[in-house]
Image (tube, rainbow over all chains, first blue to last red; front, side, top):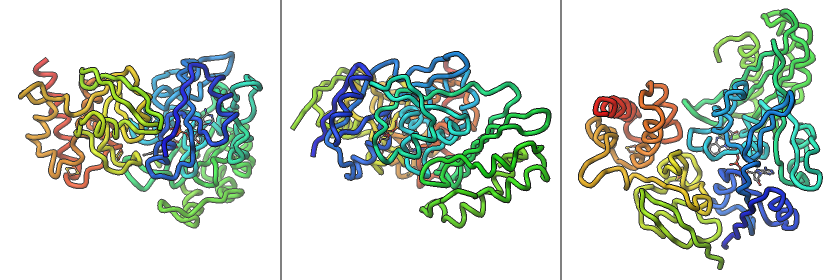
Length: 273
Length: 159
Ligand SMILES: Cc1cc2nc3c(=O)[nH]c(=O)nc-3n(C[C@H](O)[C@H](O)[C@H](O)COP(=O)(O)OP(=O)(O)OC[C@H]3O[C@@H](n4cnc5c(N)ncnc54)[C@H](O)[C@@H]3O)c2cc1C
Ligand code: FES
Ligand code: FES
């Protein structure tokens, strides 16, 4: 079966085209869509894409960064102001994948993929859809909760608050294949420090649930604590609360749960991964 | 059946072909154009043997929708040598025995070319990163890494 490819110069036109065609897929970088087509299990009749330069742009808006959903991981890496996201962008595939994989596509990549999205969650990012509701931003966590339901439309950009001065962004992707492999667990930690005490930490996991998730229990257990062995003990005790990791060829559910506190500890104490 | 006209430059020469909806660039190169240098390994983005450069950047041609290279410059291993004159990377691969069965070589060479074109003085880690999406089942990688470092060195010397 051949697939119709419909290319639009404006993002909004592409968004309307997709809204009226249930069997069409919106095309970001295509790394997952093309893989599906090659494997013969992409049940789509059309691909809708846009060449809109805006869709790929990265700009600053007040205290936020607006990252076009069509920006690739390489685009993020080429932007110096986004250095707090570089480790996460570099964790996605090899160089060729990063030239293709978009920020928007990563929001919809099934677990254990979604490494970049885990970092966005820890940064409290918001997403905006193209079209009629255009411009209105909703929390990324809401999109992830409902993403299989398909009512989200085309995401136009992700809005990321500039990290506060004195806040640290830490990221680790644990993989059993070197130098590049799929995630056993990915941890992104946004750690604002007041003196030496954590205030308002946001911790997100990749590969520990069907979508990247925040771990509220860990965040609460870190509140007001120092980042040393006794300060993080309570957080480690609840490290897997609320998670539901899968067993896949990379790791079993049991293994992911066993190693989660180990890697969380190393990340929080600043020890090598 | 919808066929879409597609024009792009392949190793400097203009190409005009028809592509079928959803066809990937690797398929277009091998079937419609007849450039058999990029290989079909997995079709999943996992092995890297189909690596080509699009406007100088490495891409996996098996995951590239053909239509997206409209008007762009595509490079494959077929365009590396200049007549009988081998590219500095090809010579280095030969001297370091960096190709055994040779199946990974077209992808390795393109990944390496993308690196040297943007970074003439790569470190060993840079080289490892540059070929991290390319699998080799024969050499154990060390000869390939040595060859790329040597090619970078030779290119600087002759520049
Ligand atoms: C070899 C290989 C290695 C990989 N390694 C990693 C890895 O290490 N980490 C990782 O996280 N991922 C990895 N991936 C998965 C994937 O490449 C990335 O998640 C990538 O970011 C997906 O983006 P894309 O633009 O290619 O998605 P596409 O294939 O274009 O789209 C994927 C899905 O998202 C939807 N979509 C895309 N953009 C939008 C938008 N703006 N609005 C609404 N829906 C949209 C599409 O309709 C589709 O359903 C890998 C993939 C391959 C093939
Ligand atoms: S054939 Fe393209 S990556 Fe394997
Ligand atoms: S030489 Fe055989 S796969 Fe690399």
